[in-house]
Length: 401
Image (cartoon, rainbow, N blue to C red; front, side, top):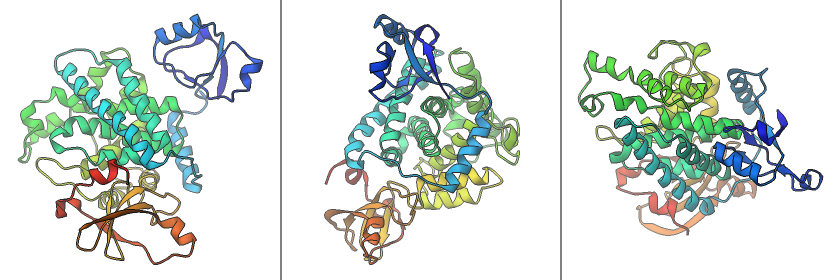
């Protein structure tokens, strides 16, 4: 729902609607720069600029977030309208800056919380706002970058990866920009409670004792307490942090909530959390291939995850998610650049290695376009593990050509 509000009615967190330029001719004192209003200072600056009104996205009070998520998942399952995206290679450089800045902010958040300081809310909003921008321009770049982080920085990278993957999925479903920012904030903060768990437990490589696992299971409560004391985070963010380890069948923690009582943002973050954990290298385990991780998650439907939501999550990421190394029927190898939700077996790929894993001049191929033109000679056989070949995909994903 869209409403015209006076500047005096504006509040941080409201989202200014994107409008056509012609409307300014009829409403010359209308503020039209789209985006989420982040601070009172920003609103005061708008007021001093002489603006009198703005059109704002207002959540319909008749539709709860839970019902909206159900509706969006249902609608997305029936159709997948194509969206205009910034080309992958053009967006990747900007996405890398966004990701690096987000990593820096994650380190700062965790450092501040460990010292008992408040989280910088405004800087967190700005960080997530940039992630949302990148997800809208081309979500595949963020998905690729989430797979390139070093396990030595897993604590920080996991916070950013979960935020980014959650936002990508939320954008795919059709959440509003304001909702995407709050979802991204919840993803970024979801594991803050681990700062209150002894590091000897967090970093333990051996099997946890029952008492140690019981302490780990308290981290959602610890995290909720930490951000509640900030007095700046919205209620749905608190609920998401509290519920992100709850499971649809009631076997999760800390409160054994069932699907109907788990917050909508938490259900999205739970999917992103598990996917990133499965596909990330850790000091005590190797990453699982993305397509196998998604197959495992599909097997968790009706237990850990809502079946419709996990199916849409898989459709969003694709059978061969962006950043995957794939083996082709020619024997050559390529890296997936962009997924294709409408035709999941035919993403855009860059062919980079011959059958002996020797580098070759890179060739970009849109498998769907090639098939549409009658070329059915090229297809993906399977995902391959770059670690098994001691191969780093980062140079192929972050440079042009």
